[in-house]
Length: 170
Image (cartoon, rainbow, N blue to C red; front, side, top):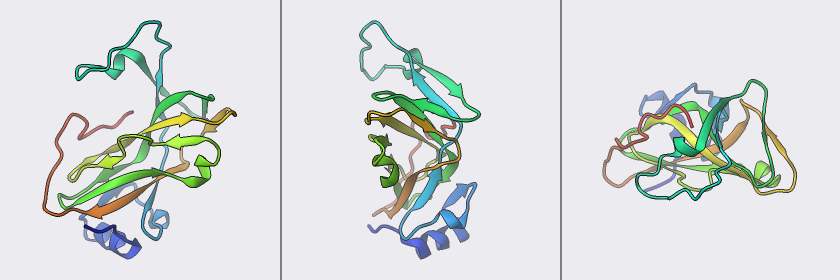
């Protein structure tokens, strides 16, 4: 099990083993790929009652899907789900990890703070769990390189086909 470096990432994309749609070679760093924020956000409702966190919990019941043209204002303490512009398609021998970018963490923006693992065999856009832990409102702009994807070889082969295997929206 090893993290793929730039040359290996580019080889995997050229060979068709990894597909990133759309793909720009300029987004590939020494050992990661920058991913961009799309214009869809899932915003939490103010919920006056306790919401029970169980296996049957439905996030649609406490959120609303919003499309923005210009920017989304994320207030201090507010959590929101975004989604990557890119669709990530991995083979059954690669997995991945999403990480926020340090330049935005320094502003108080936590990007993808839980559930950052990308299963082998996925074919979807990545939902980003974001929260503003700083004291200043932050305007989030679609098209911003908001996070990075790190690819890693697996030992053995596997394929995820669960509930969010083909997600398009947050």
